[in-house]
Amino acid sequence: MLVVIKKDYEEVSREAARIVAGAVRCRPEIVLGLATGSTPLGLYKELIALYGTGDLDFSRATSFNLDEYLGLPASHPQSFHHFMEQSLFSKINLPRQNIHIPDGMVGHDYEAYCANYEQAIKSAGGIDLQVLGIGRNGHVGFNEPTSSLASRTRLKALSRETIEDNRHFFASESEMPKCAITMGIGTILDSRRVLLLASGRSKAAAVAKAIEGPITSSVSASALQMHPDVTFIIDEDAAYSLTQRDYYRHVLEMTRIFTPERLS
Ligand code: PGA
Image 1 (cartoon, rainbow, N blue to C red):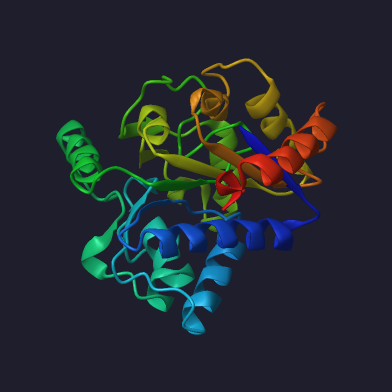
Image 2 (tube, rainbow, N blue to C red):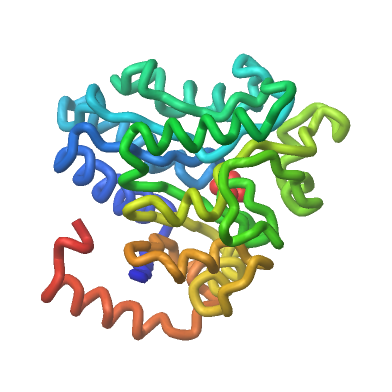
């Protein structure tokens, strides 16, 4: 596990973009796992800028998004379909047919739908690089606390904290979805490489539990400790509660010298 501590959100976004862009250049047919939320917005802006200057080409890439609210059509302004369209897909050349986001309007037979999503990831060759944010409650995707660490894509009831964090996006509490379809923790752990981005003091406790706490289903992100290639890119505020910050800096210096490919 690499922990990269940057000064602020802008630096986090630039570092994440450097790694994602490098991965796309190295493997143009890359399968990306993408996240929504305020955290990856800076990364997406950087990627759009690189595409705009002709420095990045997504024409052979494929993407799978982590999750979608249940009950929201793609056209709903708060749907993750809409978010991705506005924040990234309408501004780069990732082919439409290569974009996958769980369908919030799947009205029945959730199990079969979710099994198909898993199968689509497998058929694409698996996710090469998964981008994650982290919730205040330690969730990744919508894998709320007590999600099975072996979980796959499924219907998930949202926690009270997640509903509270997101209800201001909706006109009233009754409009706020109560469930979502999300990739599971097992799905995320199958990705070849994971980048988790976090910014701000509100994430400090979750980040510290994920990196330094015990592996527990109460903090879904702690399952990443079992993954062989995870990089946390976090700002100083999000790193605030980590007790081993100097050691992470030392690890990074040694990585730059001995295994720089892990940072490329
Ligand atoms: P945020 O959400 O990026 O909007 O903070 C992260 C999450 O809940 O996973």
